[in-house]
Image 1 (cartoon, rainbow, N blue to C red):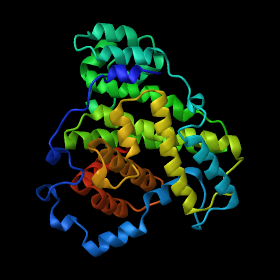
Image 2 (cartoon, one colour):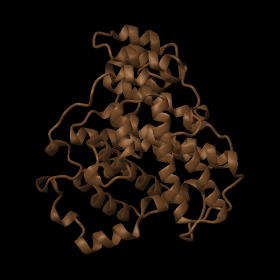
Image 3 (cartoon, one colour):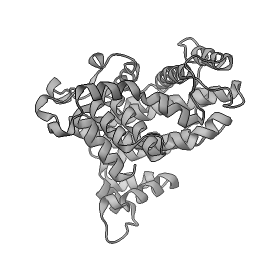
Length: 342
């Protein structure tokens, strides 16, 4: 897996004006005033709803009923801190390898002169990728009256930019199916759901902000890979979730999972823009790069969506929170996720 993303993205991110890529929409882009909560209600809701403090208890099926961590949680937190440190043993041994055809295909997609016939030959080597391609073009998104059964026709419909996104999705999907113990067994399918929703949010926000979608998409996938690797670490040192109980553990897990993601990204030699976006997730929004701002918002919107879908949060509260977090971009993106059932 090493080097393939650098070869794929052997260029810097596209430049854009600050006005175009600002994380906060301009006054002219704000929704109508009757869509906006009043300042007092907004601050009250923001203080009352911490997305991660709702998301992680749902993800791992525990009740975060106290603030301070238990002794068992402190041991887990120390292990995660040690494993996410820059000088710790490599964590890439916890990440399965991807099929060899994936980096080869992504490399081909860098060539502007590559033909669909050449891409078809490569796609035919991977039955999982072929099935995903046909499933995508036969979805309701393309409004087809007749099913698509040939690779060439599917490629003509999908286009090479969307094919890159699909290939990356297929490459990362096995990472969320690894169940090595209690925590990955509990959270694997839920993280796969979150990853799919987060990727859709990245695509939507990138289009609205006129950003290159692929780097945001990769950052989103890597962000969630960090979490699944952190859960595999937890599986190795702890038998179950019975002693998980605190909000402090939720915060620590989010922090260390992000650091693990950075370690994995560096091991795999991901593009610098992707690593920067991850490293800035704990920084103030004003310090974030355009990709980092987009990733932060996509992460929160996708978590809101899965919480609503699993009856952990009211849809009205999620919409208000999306508007507070991301202005018009946040609200429109959240509603698109809800409408699509992502």
